[in-house]
Image (tube, rainbow, N blue to C red):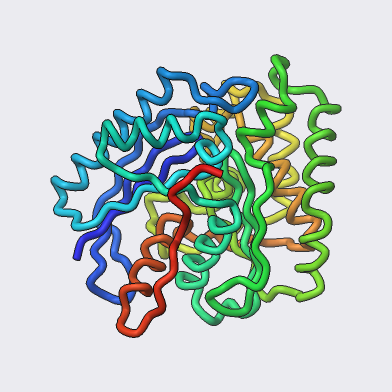
Length: 321
């Protein structure tokens, strides 16, 4: 059976199609729609009409693409950018009318749980007690566990895009006091959970998300063209060096660095601050990059729920908070 997931995020709306005839999903096709919705939100987090329309059009294009690829079931879900919007209901209704889809609202905790599930499946049991870090545009997910289900999973509003909008004003690059403000906020919101995870002494620390993959490439990890099975790591010491370099460059010059895409150059500095500060709080010197993340977690969860004898449970809620 061919299945698909449509991930509505802060920077991109991404369709992933996979064959689901085996124990794990086998990706066969992916399409990205670079909408940069986070750039359109107002001071209250509301998406304006034109952005809602662009999103609905992208969802309709994704639904048409999925049908062309023979997808039997397409699951659409939205994360912080829609979940926290005051006009969340309007956004979901526009997508329903334009694309015929019913996007589910993914809670932050559920994001952390499903991303952990995907990383555990990729890393295998050799990873032992494992801590996961995922830095998105609107939120950061941290999870820890010894099995496929995390013992601890949290989501905090520390996404790279969000912090860039909230702390970095028109100055480019931002002054040192704004960088210190970001570090203070990360420490404040993650101090307790990271202390709890340190007690467990994780055997493996894993990173997902495009932000962390780009930072790893900046710090010398092999490029994506070498394939998903090539080991990639993000070293804290090297990240500190590159963080200092990012802090001294305007966004346009950051985009010329290895791994940093023009679309994410503006938030790369905030992402690096979050990554480095969290690694310090966790007392982690190395993160191992995992190519599977939330979308794969959704697919794996669906496959496991379809297995004979598996208990049924909802993945997410359809309604706005």
